[in-house]
Image 1 (cartoon, rainbow, N blue to C red):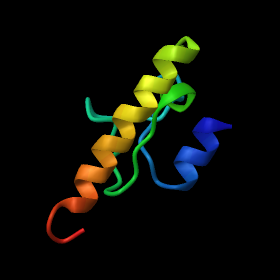
Image 2: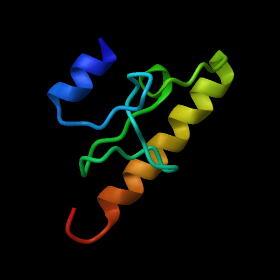
Image 3: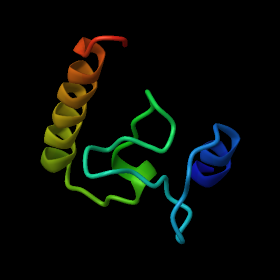
Image 4: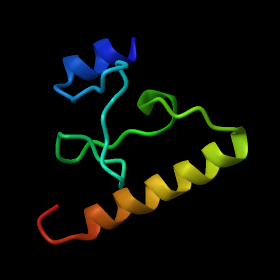
Length: 68
């Protein structure tokens, strides 16, 4: 399901079919980030929550840049 959705949006996927992201969780499509199970991360609940918080801060910073 993740791979089909990703390909439908034009997102790059890795060899296992998960969404490929940069170290800042950005995909190859500007303005789209991915996290958690969609990128193949198997995290415990607490780690997933903090990973989500980091993703929110990254996205917020992107929107605060001029031109976004």
